[in-house]
Amino acid sequence: MGDRPDDLRALIDSVAAQDGDRVEVVVVGQGTPVTGVPDWVRTVDLPANVGIPAGRNIGIEAFGPGGTDVDVLLFLDDDGRLAHPDTAELVRQAFTADPRLGIISFRIADPETGATQRRHVPRLRASDPLRSSRVTTFLGGANAVRTKVFAEVGGLPGEFFYAHEETDLAWRALDADWMIDYRADMVLLHPTTAPSRHASYHFNVARNRVWLARRNLPAPLVPAYLGVWLLLTLARRPSLSALKAWSGGFREGWRTPCGPRRPMRWRTVWRLTRLGRPPVV
Image 1 (cartoon, rainbow, N blue to C red):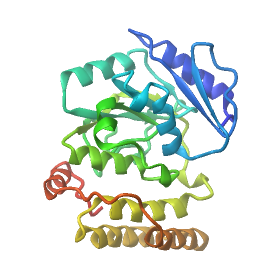
Image 2: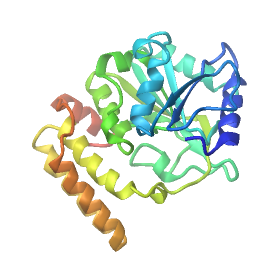
Image 3: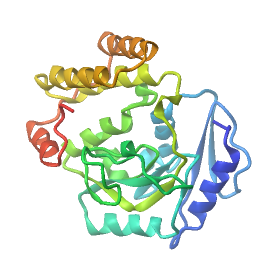
Image 4: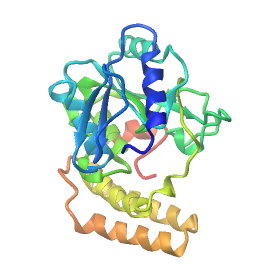
């Protein structure tokens, strides 16, 4: 959004420093012109902020229709930077070694402390962020996606604006028999922050979780999934203002269109369960 030019340049420099073939870069300006980037970086200037998933979908098209000019797409937050110069090579090796690997979630670490927040480990057993594993979702600001995944299951849900768009894509990818890995050795350095810093966080989280369930889950699991998350939200004892925003988002999720409904197969429900995260939590 144009408010972190030094961070953006540090990210681009870390991408330029990667071993092997050069990684092509596209920067999407969300309601602001992109300036101060190297000449070899492609830019897309949008007249307004269309949200994270819609902006990334537009960025994909800069690599040809559906991103088909490349084999793999990396999505990196503009206030992060790659910690090691071998990350791109590790990504290439991982996708080459496993033809059914569709998505890789990087580890996010604080640049000062090296610590990884629990919420940045995309599995329930998150106590050891240095352990790589198969997972059922991924981190939106630090990941790599095989282009064939988008061709097969479609792009990110632009109407979400932000929150849960990664899980929506992950569930569709898993339902199409792709796999997702969390790789602790692929690191994006990113300052420790709280997601609630965004003014619309609680509203979006609740609305999009309802949309996520309505779009993707078999009918019997929709109330179970949302009921569990309602209880978890109350157990965290949010402030009155946060609970009010969350309740408004929850109602909005039921009242408004959620996009096309494509419930996952029960076989996929079982796969999610075997991977440690049944789609009720």
